[in-house]
Image (tube, rainbow, N blue to C red; front, side, top):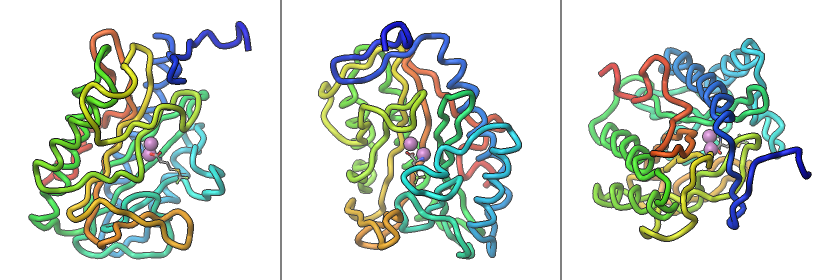
Length: 271
Ligand code: MF3
Ligand code: CO
Ligand code: CO
């Protein structure tokens, strides 16, 4: 609609937001990250994922925000909670966490129309060595991708940085799910894939807003979706981890909107 939205669209269909829009994204991202900070102490042996989700839903409401996932394509919960070999889109419920379970919690909130989407890993009980490595590599892979974000680089540079790093550690990158443009909408172009070749794909420009959210498996990359139509698992049942940030491209590089206010993004921060 002419005059209604000043945001330009690139030839790849990627919206270019205004500098002033970054403040809206920062507010939404901060709330999502703060909720992920607060939920950490609930991730304990014997806890149910349903209780964790209820806490998140209440927290979103108390902040005067809206959950982006409740009602999204029929999804009914304020978070996705993905345990062990669940790659993403795990549905919260009565399942109790066991000692050594690794857990991804993914929260998306809407604040004043802006979307903040972030996830990170947690551990119930004691973390094994092998698993600690998976979490470390997945966390660091996200940051390899983020460090490739600057005007003039391409989306292929982001994917290549992540893939090279992960495969260098003899782990695999999931191909079936990707990051996405966001802003005033939840999922917009482009598909931000976490593999690829340098120099390919759309060129990054200041004002682009998107997530990077690599899923890394200890075994093979293939996934399948269970009969509930949401839960994605590794086909070989190997463990899977994921970290996600919402970011914006600036004149010189990037801004991360979903940094942990408490500095608790990394799962082994207290070990
Ligand atoms: N937050 C997820 C993402 O990173 C999407 C979850 S959609 C849901 O894109 F419906 F499963 F919640
Ligand atoms: Co996302
Ligand atoms: Co998410």
